[in-house]
Length: 227
Image (cartoon, rainbow, N blue to C red):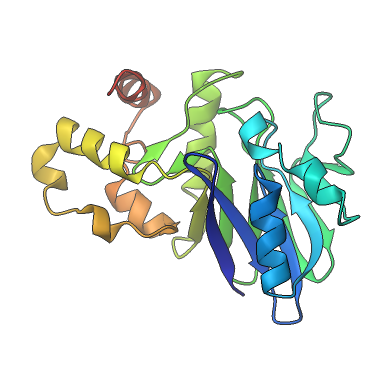
């Protein structure tokens, strides 16, 4: 089951999950033109839209897509959900066409943030919870909640393929080399594909290697001011 990863905006990634029968899901659309162009080029039929959270750079393209496709829009269950969301979810199965999707409510980056798992292939669409060698900032939530969500994320199958919302590979690798140069000396930018894996992140990601909230929060604050 292919996942197309396309650039949208400055550093956002567009994810389109699709099947051989032509059914497709759009995840976190910022720029509708990116999605519409790919769907047309591949002759795909859009079955639905998944929103991991409601920050503008993850939903601004939804209404543009809905002008062409009348499809369900799934997003976290909160009173702040935009009016175009047709199904609000927390933890549990999400039925869209023939896709087997499971939603997990993992707040912290935002107080209403979901992770979506495609169960047959163990694909995780994590939005802004986790990045290559990094994790999300805390915006409208509290640090302890994001820390707990990351602990839950660590419990997914180690073979899970992870699709993140932003391309921060270069900056995060520079940060890692600053905090622990000897450990990260053998890791190069070319080793970091557009998608990552839980196995890769458990080994390399400093935010998943911390042993306590205090250690994690100290690291997160260092990353907040890193240039």
